[in-house]
Length: 456
Image (cartoon, rainbow, N blue to C red):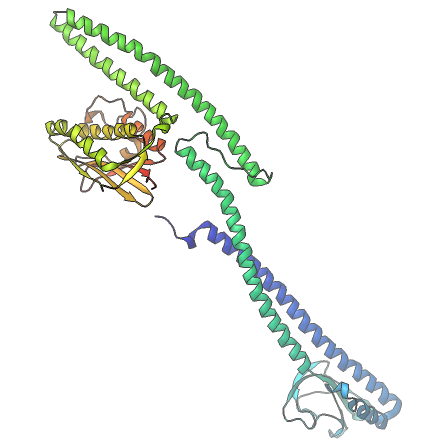
């Protein structure tokens, strides 16, 4: 079953890149946000501590009167409106400062504390950071900074964080998708070459971009490997083709000699023996012919004869040709194909493939009654099938059936050499298609060729 886009490697790679980039961006922005907030608070604390030290020094030098004067002078400065201070007497009363009263929960030696307090004349509590220090004579000094400005900066920093994060996610998504697209495009070059090789186009190569990067180097290595494989296969084909071709003439001469001997002899036993030898010569001749056809189909010989034609007339012609023979064997041939369904193919090679399949059905569909020739469109492909209602073959045998020189079960009879389905599969590959073997409904065997549909 084909998996959906969201399960594809491209999507998962893009998602992984996106998540990594977003995580890195969020981490970076969080660090900046926390550092900024910490710096703002640190500045406020430093200001409170500096004021505390200044006032404590003033108290040591000028006493309470000097400290009260210094506090009033400091509060009179308009630019220092966030500053808070309070001097508490030994009895706990407020002596000077801009807070309403000494907060009950604040001790005399607070090093830094954030708390909400009312300033003198204020209508609402304000968040502030304070430090306290005891003075001689039982007095206690509180200094601090209202954190409203710091809070505003923190809110602005948080808003900037969210905007930057949103923009970063968008950019990261674009970058991730582009990276996945580039990677998928490079991998597609390898997939196209592999598909072409699987379809029998041994001269196909991986498209290179000459950049010298890892993909380009991989393409170079694969192309070198494919060239070596093509050379070896070519040599093997040449040997096979030469042997098959060279053997045909001696076999033909042997058959002719046997036929002449059969015509001259009057001995009954000799007649039977010669007839058997002639049958074997015919089988050997057919085997050599099939081997040559496979070799030529694998070499792509005949692709220049591809033509556009409708499948329905082709199947009707086959049914008419095989009709009398099928009737003698107890079969009827049924055809089902849309009148407008067409392919671009080598007509004679396709006829040869379908004839092989019909011959197989006539030989092996023992007990069957119908051979069905069907063609149907399936997406961008044409499914061309030959099925019967015989006993069929097992699942294990389906994988072996197309192997060369494999005869599934000698008990099934027949005089084939085990090259028929191999030839059919080779013809399918020659057309850029595939061959599959399966079960027919409700029983029997179905062989299907899937070929590219003809474009208008």
